[in-house]
Length: 260
Image (cartoon, rainbow, N blue to C red; front, side, top):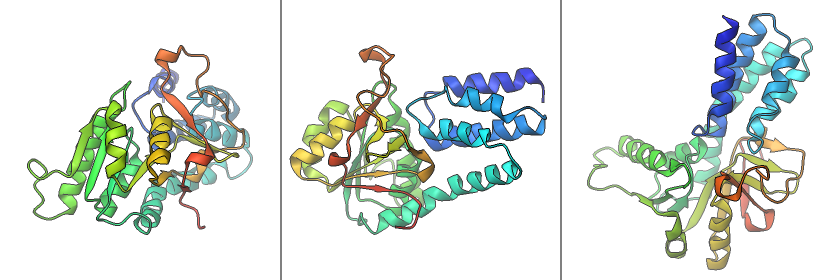
């Protein structure tokens, strides 16, 4: 592969603000495999990945894995790819035990983990916050409608949709009438806090105020040994930040693919 192609793919990965953490990780894994196949030093790619997406641990964690470039690196990357791909299925199975199909759920952003889980559960009502800035909620709502329509034979997504796209500012009105909140994870740390789409912290606070469970779900590779604090993007102006930090005391449970 031409060096310029790899450079362009790295640039696109760095600039990607629409994809979820798992999609970013799988993209980075594809770049890593091609990088190694060309005989390039994994440590050079590690340095690139470790500076990208500071609020999304999987990319930096992949960089760390590449620094351990001893024998078997390719096999370890292949195993990680399988684990990431299988992780959502395992998480969905665990969430089915926590969230009945009769539930009303509120969520934010466009997490593939949350999306696949809610489709697997077949939740009765899903309220998707628009997730500004960026508006990823629109894509999430559309994907949920399609997935639930396919899951339920004869379900008419156009006239009987159980998915509601709602303004972020409406969360205070909606949380009192749902059974729980379910959000994705971009990073979770040693203190049990999560970093996720800005608006997640206010959602968790609403859930605390109205006594609703607040669940966060994501692959264990999103774990960071570093304890986060304050805002995830302190270098950005407040008006341009895309992530916030939700502390452990506001989270009912973090669900990963690992056995409990």
